[in-house]
Image 1: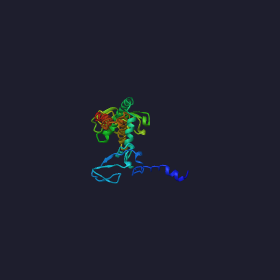
Image 2: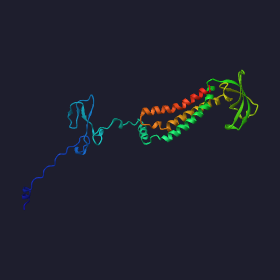
Image 3: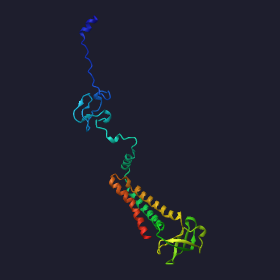
Image 4: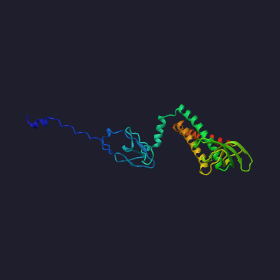
Length: 260
């Protein structure tokens, strides 16, 4: 059969339909998620995808500003590089590790006892540091041990001989003077004090400064191990942290009043 007959009898193939292309990415419209209109106050006649201005305050957000399902990307998800990410990490850690009641109770009891000890040994040196003291002399009657384990007892006599206290514990005795009958200048907080402090200068301040730092460390441990910082509600978390620090401080205040 001649080729002209085949061309005449065969119907012409239809032309392919035009595919609508998304102008932002250049991909077919059907392959992309549906976008949602975003309100923008003060913006009118914003160009749409078709290139014509849209009436009102509504415009179609670019594909880079929406999720795969068409919902807009929240502002906080595009966090600048200078904004720290630790608040998000802290929220996730609180959700993963809720407070353990048994661990919190054990930490509360143990650290409260430790805070009471540090408050007790720091109360007297604190009053001496602020000037609430009575000067005098102490006669060492007995000393045992050496270094940090040294323990001395003596008789304190006020400078004006208003009172005399027997059997007081003498703190800060130099090792070379730790002999029976040694006479040292000392200070006490009052007639009812059970400790006479013979140390002067920086050593007198280190006693209450180190004790205060240890007290604050116990308070921080209570806040940490009781789970006060891992509570999900911000207001409850703030009150719990404040209570964790207030407990040891109240204990210290009680010992300060007792040592007056």
